[in-house]
Length: 204
Image (cartoon, rainbow, N blue to C red; front, top):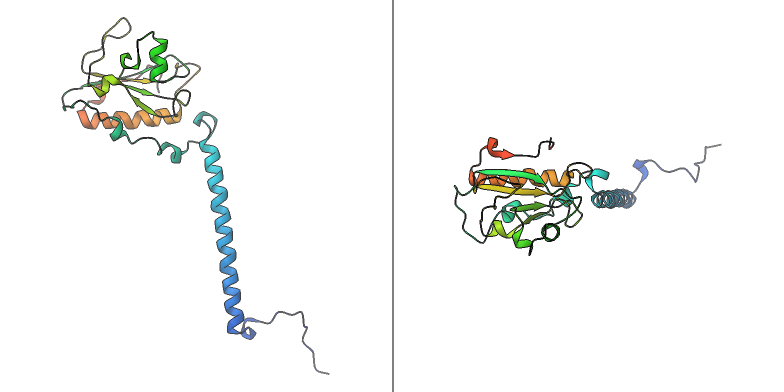
């Protein structure tokens, strides 16, 4: 008695017709495409979820950081800028856990945000986007900071206020990155020497 073939047995590749082979190849490609699409969707959802958390609570999200305004646009001003106008940079804490230009002006009892005594404010997500660099009116007009009881710098000092109290509210990863980029841009534009850049004592 000759052996009979099993009707459930899958024929080998040699026995598959060209039409069947094309079907299997197309089916395999479709499966790979679906798996790739699902993986990309899941990855995007995870990145968005991480991006909605402050860096202190999770991963630093470069995708959200790069949505901030380019620093070259930030350091432009309405008034003309000369290469020798500024020679120093001072970074200091706002002494608050939250804020922006308007809120800092109000807390200081100033008439308006145009009177705030710094050139840039870097927000921490509480009052402005985390890492957002706000430009003050003094920078727009290229005015020097007015010396007072708490500050005795010179007329060529750029002052940058980082929203943080330096104790319980430390700078976020976004703020640190934004500050680095801002200082580098100002350094290039005005040829400010590294020894002329002053950070808070506990910055590092």
